[in-house]
Amino acid sequence: MEIKRDYYLNKLIEAKEDGLIKVVTGIRRCGKSYLLNNLFYQHLLNTGVKDDHIIKVALDDTDNEELLNPKNLSKYIKDKIIDNDTYYVILDEIQLVENFEGVLNGLLRILNIDIYVTGSNSKFLSSDIITEFRGRGEDIKVYPLSYYEFMSVYEGDKLDGWVEYITYGGLPLVVSMKTDERKANYLKKQQNNVYINDVIERNNIKNDTELVTLVEIISSSIGSLSNPKKLSDTFKSVAGINIDPKTISLYLKYLEEAFLIEKASRYDVKGKKYMSTPYKFYFTDLGLRNSFINFRQHEETHIMENIIYLELKRRGFSVDVGVVELKERKENEVTYKQLEVDFIANKGNNKIYIQSAYTMPSEEKINQEERPLLKIGDNFKKIIIVKDYIKRTRNENGIITMSIFDFLLDANSLDY
Image (cartoon, rainbow, N blue to C red; front, top):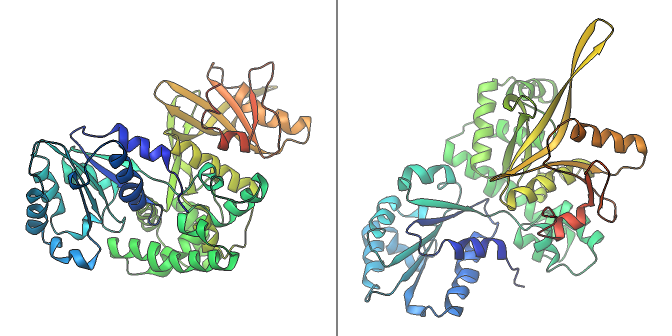
């Protein structure tokens, strides 16, 4: 079963021969290696690149053990360059090579070479790229399968696919499994053996129980406002553990660096400034999120919000949580009230305000969702996304309402 990853493939194609090291990052098992070694490799062949001008090395293969020596790897690649045509170098799990940054920086001096690498997030994170390659690397971040990618291989209708997707997530290997039991068991094994261990090993964490408990707490409250102090209080009340907010802040940073979670900061729309706290966390893969809490909590409202956040990030938007502060006067008393806009999506000069409403069964609920958008006071696009199968509409205030399925299955759904 081949799953097309055209969005990321096009990113790689756009970056061809730009003089930079293309570093493909993302949560483990999300399809980085397949993207490079299969999809991009096939693209190169289809566009006329000769096979002997594509140098592929899987550095986690025992047959290539001698190439883990940086001098051997450098010599191996250089020996294959025998003319002035462009050579494409694809190195998988580059972090296994000692002083890999020295090897790559050295290869960059060869004018007819184009370099692509992947690395597991236990040793090789996007935050390292700037340091290691001194500005000569660019990060292409890969997420697990989107709902659109998932549905391209799912044998069923949109609604059944939705239930499957929000339960087991979008890790490609999980999607290929045939039974619920296999999917759940795989995710449970991976959560600690791969993902948590990555964080522990990279950051020399001594108390793994605290880290796992933190992930479980965040899993139970996706899309809720939080901060280290609030999480510290939750540790004390729920788990009976005293843990300093500074330690929690470090753990959160580690989990973000490992691509397990992402933080959405709050932005004051009228004041045009960021608010330091609280903020929201979303999971990169909902199957992993569900496995951390044994598939117990299935609040579709919060899950849908998480999916919208991820889709916006996949489409290249920076995403914040919006706050609209209102000043109200009652008799002689002035009060301030904060209304929440679920997401502010920015890309260049394009800004879109989005509400995740799940369902709007009454006029009261419609007014509740529209009110923050109406109080913003600018002319950027405003959208409400609901779970219901509905036809896309635009009301007299310019607010668009669309179905989650139209949003996810149409790559241009935000453009018109």
